[in-house]
Image 1 (cartoon, rainbow, N blue to C red):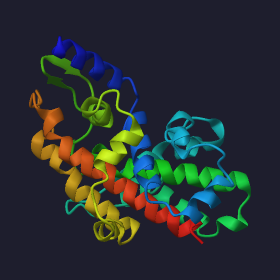
Image 2: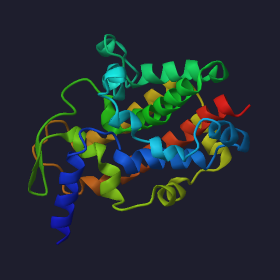
Image 3: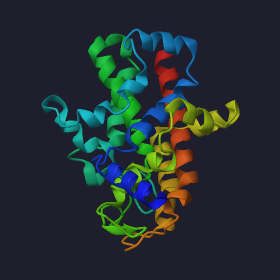
Image 4: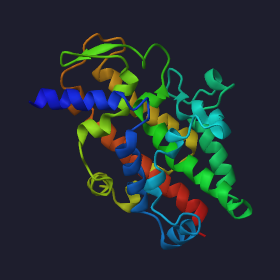
Amino acid sequence: MKKLILSALMAAVLCLNLQAWGSLGHKTVIAVAQRHLTATTKANIARYFDYDLKRDATWMDSHRRDEDIAYTTAWHVYNVDENHNYDPNPRLDKGDAIFALQIADYNLKHYKDLSDSAVVMNVRMLIHFVGDMHCPVHSYFPGPRNFWAFKYRGEDYKSFHGFYDGMPALLWPGADPDELAAQLDNCNACQRRKIARGTLLDWAKACGDRSYGIYEINPPLTEELDPDTVEKSREIISLQLRDAGYRLAELLNRYFGK
């Protein structure tokens, strides 16, 4: 019975069409961040959003092919080099998640000079692409590391990328994002500041260093994944969701906390 349930969950996850983290993961990142927003930040954000930010967690995925913003389709991933440093060169013509965050960062530093609709769009970009940059398979390492077919517990799957995109739902099926955020939010103020310290490029490097661990569990082009892959991925996924939330809180407080 457990195998049947897991197989059904896997099939559902792989139908998400490469939506990094899925709804649960993206909402959890925002929920972690919301636990560390100042009162001023919350009040200023509420001027533009009369609803919970988690409602827009996957807005960029749902609308990525809309004619007006179809140019953002390629922005959900980014490349790193052999040392796990951000490498913009492979995607210079299309842009990537780091490029998207640099745009949002520039605009939101001056959000009071923007129209309300521009603020909303840039916040949607920010809350989504911070999540995306922390998804392990959205750090593109050199070599064939994302899109190969494999077997997992006797079932056939077409995409390693899709498998890890849905990992939060596999680890915590049916979880409430706020409850999961409370579980993952286990750092004190000093530790949170250390995690959120640095630039977007520093964060990309940190993500690359940790995210590479999924390929140590399952080397690229492995024909049959370790049957304990999901459980062995728990620590990496937990830390990436948590750190994404801390870094998102740092940015939101930086822009809206004055």
